[in-house]
Image (tube, rainbow, N blue to C red; front, side, top):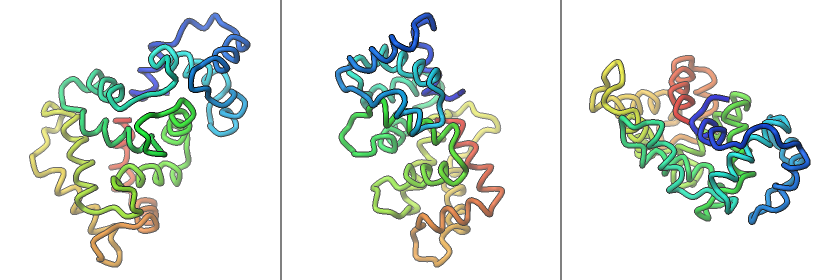
Length: 214
């Protein structure tokens, strides 16, 4: 499991000495009590041991049992010090914050991670669509896709290789939209997004960039 969020959590996880009963006890005493390990194991593609490690780190970093947006910004500024990760962290936080209440519970966190790290292509693409659909109206506009692309380029910084031109995000979006917006109505639906992405090798390889910055 190699992604920024997992590295952040596991760096805070306690040594592996405690047994599963300790973890079960921890899960029952947290202020915002998550569902039991067995239920989370059924909902995700993580093993019980992995969930215990993730929970230990999560609890150490977020004793209240909730992650807020400022925490996400801090995580990404640490992993991408060469750029400005603020906007990307904001968008990513909103994608995890399913009910839009400004806080992410452990369950939402691990369910999202499970999709991003071990989900099928279809599941990952649905999650990506949710990220790009900033206002959650069921459509992606050029402006929304450009905002996400710019935030990724800003986070990667000016020191990436090959060096990225200022207009690179816009070119990227124009190319995507030309392929995805099948009926030329100016927006991309979930069906257009899924169908185009799964048929186009170039787009699928572009999605790797996205996976590298979770």
